[in-house]
Image (tube, rainbow, N blue to C red):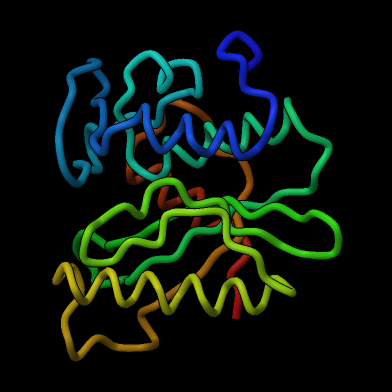
Length: 184
């Protein structure tokens, strides 16, 4: 990020918020809008995302991970929340980081006018953050009708996950998540 003159977390946040559009690339590099197709989706590397300027939360979270690993000395973690409906499994991934005995949700993506929660949000602890993440995502999912109003609470799953391999498809990403730490 040094070549973009990005030296602070807040500068990186603004860059992410401004530069990227929601969409995805398939395994042939073709651009798509909207929700990904698990069979042909391809998880981009951070440099590929910077070039394409188009990604879903999975791609964006890997860019965030790369930034925090290479440009800060802060502890960070990534989380995946999904509603397991047996079909598209609506989901969202986030990066959190720890600084000065606080934990922060780094969220440049939630810029939807119906549910805007874009920002760097501070919490006392990771439990409070994850409870809020679930609440905010459920609100977003209900407003945008990506889960049913009578959703099953047991179908909401939260995982802490490590860095996946780049260029995996959506099913492989889901397999990576399923083999990660389930948060109860």
